[in-house]
Structure formats: structure tokens, C-alpha cells
Length: 135
Image (cartoon, rainbow, N blue to C red):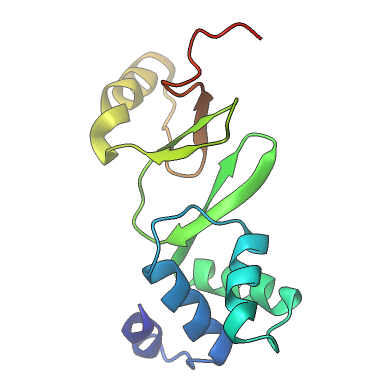
């Protein structure tokens, strides 16, 4: 990903490098606050506002993506578009295979003329541990 930025003529700043290295090293689904806390462990000089601006730039350049999770803060990961599901009970975020929603996307297009962008939001529901439990 750093090479991708260099190819675009962008500088590799400390904050850009730290965020890309962090996201490259984890499969966790991280909020901005999670990213800031982890980055600041090794780079306490990088402020939260810098993290926000850096993520915004990285997203603009196609290096990072964010996913909306209902009422929870968005999560960020390196750009590799894939859908997510989120348990409304425990908050667990899981990746689902890229083609898992193809049939639904096709039906939406054919029946309603609607083009689904399934990687920008998470499907909300209950994970296997909580499905069917009474509240």
C-alpha cells in the first residue's frame, strides 16, 4: 500500500505509514478511536485529528475503506472491498465472501433497477451465539 501512495506521487508521512502498517498487520475491524489508540502507543505525537485527516486522505486515494455499522462508529480496513455482517447483540463484525450477495444484488437490479453497494455498509442481525435468544 505504501508503494501505491508513492506511485500516486504522495509523500509517506509518519501518520500514513503508521496507519497503513497497523491495518496491514491486523484482521480486526477498527474504529478511528481504535486506530488512534494503537498508533499512539508507538507514535504519541500523532493526534486524533491527524488520524481522522489521514484516514480521509487514504480513503480518497483508494488505500483504506470504511464500513457503516448501523448506529455504531464506522470501521476501517485496507481497501479490498468485501461485505460485512454485524451482530446487534455482541457487536462482533465478520467478513463474508465477496460473492455472497450477488444473487440479491441481481434481484434488486432486475426487479427495482437498484444497484447495490454492499461493501459500504454492514448487514445487521444476530450471530450464531445470539440468534433466537429472547431478550
